[in-house]
Structure formats: structure tokens, C-alpha cells
Figure 1 (tube, helix red, strand yellow):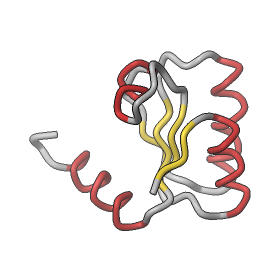
Figure 2 (tube, one colour):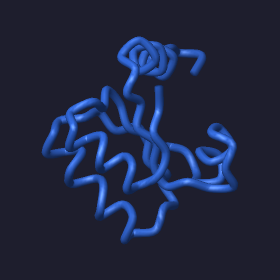
Figure 3 (tube, rainbow, N blue to C red):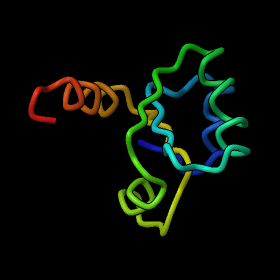
Figure 4 (tube, one colour):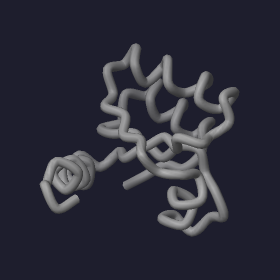
Length: 87
């Protein structure tokens, strides 16, 4: 349902299987530069507003710079939750 880490996110984007990406605001500029232009070029929605520690905790890691959601239903649910006024 998700892929974790900059390299895995890049690979999933190239395959065309990413429905939504979450990139940590405090990720290293080098990591952000590797993934954000590709996500933009492929018109993948990118969500921010999280730290690398928060993002990592969500997937069982200490930190991570990026996560790609490849499951369309999960991506839709996340997008709806973020659009909700209580989110």
C-alpha cells in the first residue's frame, strides 16, 4: 500500500504507481531535490506538514524523508482526511 524512502518513492513514481506522496518538511535538501521534481513532473499530489520523525513513526522507522501511497483507496482516504476541517 505504501513505499518508504526516497529511492523507493522514486522507483514507484517512475513505474507510475503513486497516487499520493508525503514528504517531510525537514527532510534534507538533497533528499527533497531527488524526489520533489519527479513528483511534480508526474503530477503526483504531494502532502507536507510533517517531520521526518513523525513520518518515520507512522511506518515503523526512526525517520524517513518520503512515503508514496500506491493504493488509490488509501490515498483517497488520506486526501479526504486532510481536507476535513477537523484534520
